[in-house]
Image (cartoon, rainbow, N blue to C red; front, top):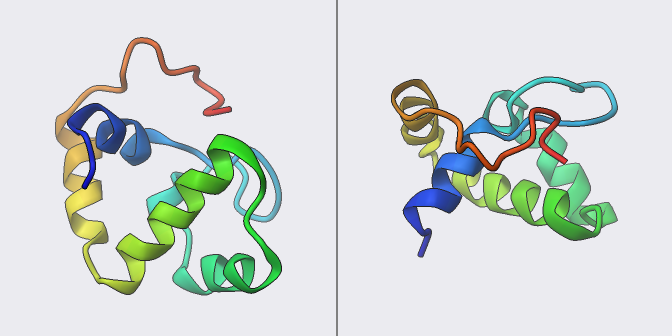
Amino acid sequence: MFEKEKLIELAHYKMPFGKYEGRYLVDIPEYYYAWFKQKGFPPGKLGFMMEQMHEIKINGIEEVVRKIRDNYPRPSNFRKSGK
């Protein structure tokens, strides 16, 4: 179960590297997460966020995350880079 603050943070999290650098995690295609699931998610917070987003995408509820992003401001303790 997601805590409200964690879900808001996830909605505003951006990819810090690679092909999708600078894009919100929710806007990255599901196949990208499926590849990471096979190869291994990165360690730390980014990997956790990517794994959570993969679950959201395979369950087809990414629109909920987009609505949260659009309707709730980014947490003040959240760094712009998302790292």
